[in-house]
Length: 193
Image 1 (tube, rainbow, N blue to C red):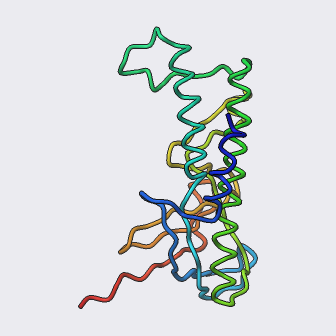
Image 2: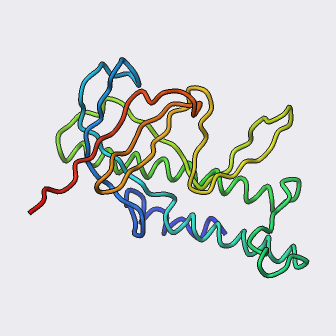
């Protein structure tokens, strides 16, 4: 299944996509030495995209497979169907999902490299985090699979990006959530005319 999606993945690498995906500029203000930067204001590029059409097709394929394996679920719960990680299908999906996570990371790297090259700028640091992804984590002494739809982990010292909107700032944060924000990304709204 994945092999036949390779041409699409190659074609879309380094592109943002549609929907809520974007690439934009802003200023990153560092208040104290952090993320490998000295205090000051920096030009920042923020991108939000994922594994593009290839990731969507893989997710759709395995979601349908999971629903087929759980016909006992009522229609309103069918989207909660699962694949057992001890099964062949579950292992295939886990591997495919992680491959698409690596692809999304490569996609961002290509986008940022192209922007920096076009502008003649040097990348000083990079912060990246996955969303709509699943992680193996320890909770209560047990290894669990945690899926965060639209969210990312915020463990101790884990960096994350919380995008804003066209008129509100985004934030670069460091976990855990109780920790004060150490730096932030301000985006300027378009000038009123």
